[in-house]
Amino acid sequence: MRASDADRERAADVLKAGYAEGRLSKDEYDQRLQRVHSAATYAEIQPLIVDLPQGPVPMSGPQPAPVLPVTFQGHPRPLAPVTPYWAAPPPVSNNGSAVGALICGVLAPMTWGVTAVPAVILGHKAKSEIKRTGERGEGYATAGLVIGYLAIAFWGLLIVFGLGLAAA
Image (cartoon, helix red, strand yellow):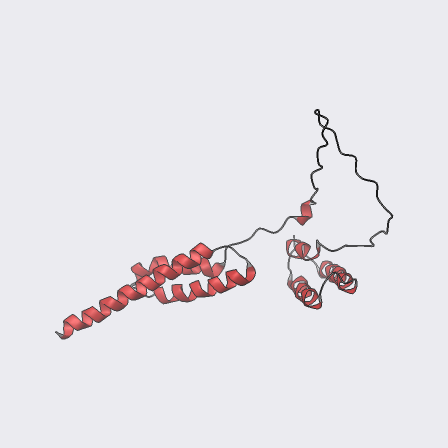
């Protein structure tokens, strides 16, 4: 669902409170705030504030230990941690440059090597983006690089030997 300006402002307030309480460093606060203001959907906003309190945190005294259910053998069974549905991490997507590198590499033999150079460029770009962002697609980028370099070498040798034979 698309987020409104009011939703982005509420998220910015949560981040501001988290920074004021010392839960976020200045760099992390600035980074998250920038991403909140550029977010278009709730799915983009939620991961940025899910680990921060989103309202007054009640101060309480010591809590009693939870009573663990007992199994039929008399041993306590540990309680499973409850993860709220909104805390699920967003799905990790494939890097677009990696997919482009693979496509350009696969097309290189059919385009007389014209797409080999873009395959190499996109492959290196994708590798650095994947390292920085944690996206998937490392294999696509590697395949695009390998095919691109092989196509460049093949067409380079073909041109060199072709010109050598034509001169002889």
